[in-house]
Amino acid sequence: MKHYEVEILDAKTREKLCFLDKVEPQATIAEIKNLFTKSHPQWYPARQSLRLDPKGKSLKDEDVLQKLPVGTTATLYFRDLGAQISWVTVFLTEYAGPLFIYLLFYFRVPFIYGHKYDFTSSRHTVVHLACICHSFHYIKRLLETLFVHRFSHGTMPLRNIFKNCTYYWGFAAWMAYYINHPLYTPPTYGAQQVKLALAIFVICQLGNFSIHMALRDLRPAGSKTRKIPYPTKNPFTWLFLLVSCPNYTYEVGSWIGFAIMTQCLPVALFSLVGFTQMTIWAKGKHRSYLKEFRDYPPLRMPIIPFLL
Image 1 (spheres, rainbow, N blue to C red):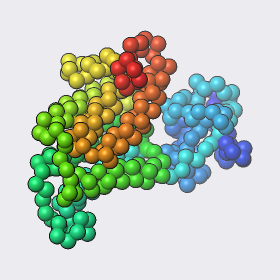
Image 2: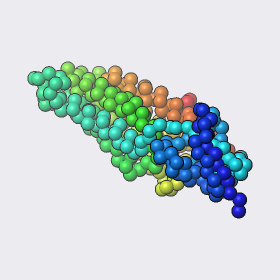
Image 3: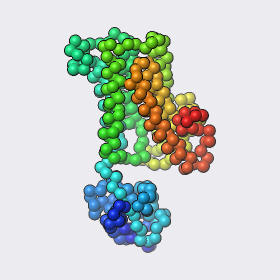
Image 4: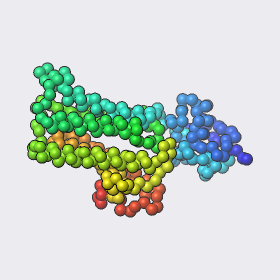
């Protein structure tokens, strides 16, 4: 059985970093990364990007050497992805922050609204309802991170945790400051507006959870297999008939409901920014589905039925 020789060069400088002799033809990129780490311990596998072209796409960990368009002497190009951190750690950190920060404002701890308001409680029912909804949302996210989500990639760049936390924590503090302020004014249309908004929020939260469960069941534990998601017997998943990423549709709907409930500008801005980012993600996933699956349902849009 013939063996391969693998030469690994720096993608920027073309400097030879490593030469691997007698590599098995069935060796995967993940195994090559492990061999590379032995000579360069500072670049652990999750930090490595190996590619066939200096400016090309990263090879997948499961790609097999003999199936790549290379000869028996293969040249791979290395890029350092920077320090990495697990997706679970990032999600837990960015979701626990808003939960804790919001409660600081809700309980009006000292140095926020002035001494006379320390640990006082709002007289408006909507303020307490908003706290319950906000807390429920982030507790749900934390539990889903621990027990529901299956990540196709184990890590992300460490710098992302600072960017993500600034976004989530900052907006949580901004909206919580106004919603729990002693001078907060309830919604214009009173109880009717709050009830309608609560219904939207609850329905969308249930829908979001249902989609996450459907996506979880689509991918076996420890697998990176991708399949076309289809509706199940759960009515909340029927939105898959019209959009590729109904979890984002429901997520945006939840925050719209929360914005209507609280009638708070920072919440509306958070919803708008979130919608913009989720639309970008949804379009990317939609393109990915179309490229990977020839029989992908043509009626689906990325995030909003028939429109976007």
